[in-house]
Image (cartoon, rainbow, N blue to C red; front, top):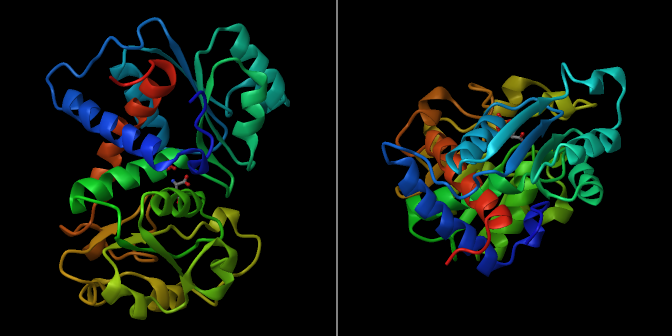
Amino acid sequence: MKHLLSAADLDAATATEILDIAASMAAVSGREIKKLPTLRGRTVVNLFYEDSTRTRISFEAAAKRLSADVINFSAKGSSVAKGESLKDTAWTLQAMGADAVVIRHPASGAPHRLANWVEGSVLNAGDGTHEHPTQALLDAYTIRSRMGKIDGLQVAIVGDVLHSRVARSNVLLLTTLGAKVTLVGPPTLVPSELGEYSYDLDAVLPEADVVMMLRVQRERMTDSYFPSAREYSRRYGLDGARVRRMPDHAIVMHPGPMNRGMEITPEVADSPRSTIVEQVTNGVSVRMACLYLLLGGKHS
Ligand code: ASP
Ligand code: CP
C-alpha cells in the first residue's frame, strides 16, 4: 500500500493488520522512552489547510515516535496566503524530499490530486465532507479494544452525517470489518444513499452496541437544517436519559471537537461509557501504524 486516501482502499485483512500493528505501537507508547528507530532519516510533512487539534498533533507525535523528521505546514502563515496553488505547494514539498505528506484540506478529493503530484506517500487527514480514514481506523481500534470485536456489532452513527467525513469513512471501514451501521439524524442531515438509516434515535438506542455522536458542523452549513439548537438537542442530543435506554455494555464515542450541550451533554461525554479520551490516545498508535505500514514496510 502506497497511499491512505480512503477507507474504501482497506480490505478487512489490511485494516486488521493496521489495528494489530497499532496494538504493538501502543505498547511502545506505554514505555518510558516512547521511540522506535523505524523511520530514522525519513521526512513526514503535515500539510494542514484546515483547522485541527487532534489529527495534526497526533500525526506529529506518531511520526516523532518513529524517529522521522517532521515538518509542520499550516496554510495560514504560508505562501498559500499569497495565492500559491496546491500543485505548486506539492512541487515545493517534493523538492524538499518529503517521504510522506499528511494532508487536511477543505476540498473533497484534494489528497487524491496530491498523490499524482508527489512521489512520496499521501495520507488523507480529512478532505472536505468526503473522508477521514485514520479517524475511522482509530475508532475501529477503540471499538475493538473496548468490546473485544467489531464483527457483528450494531453501530449507530448519530447527527450531522451530511457534512461528516468521519461518518463516511466509518461506514466504509466498520462495514468491511463486519459491523452493522445505522445512520441516525434529522432527514435534512442523513443522506439515504449512504446505507441503513433512521430518523428516530430513541428507537435505535436499545439495540446499539456503539453510539457514535457527530459534531454539528456549522462551518459547513450553507442552509438551515433544523429549526433551532434546542430542538436539535431535544431530538438528537445524547443525554443521561437517552444513555439509560442503551444496553449496559454499550459505549459512547465522539471524534471531537464536541459541541457540549448540543449533540452530547457533559454528563455523558465525561462518563465511564464514553471513549472520547481513549480515541485521542489511540489516534497516536493508529497513525504510527499507518506511517509504519506505508513507509517502513510490512509488519513481520
Ligand atoms: N474532527 C473531525 C473532522 O475534522 C470531526 C469534526 O470536526 O467534527 O472531521
Ligand atoms: N477528530 C478530529 O479530526 O479532530 P481535529 O479536527 O481536532 O483534528
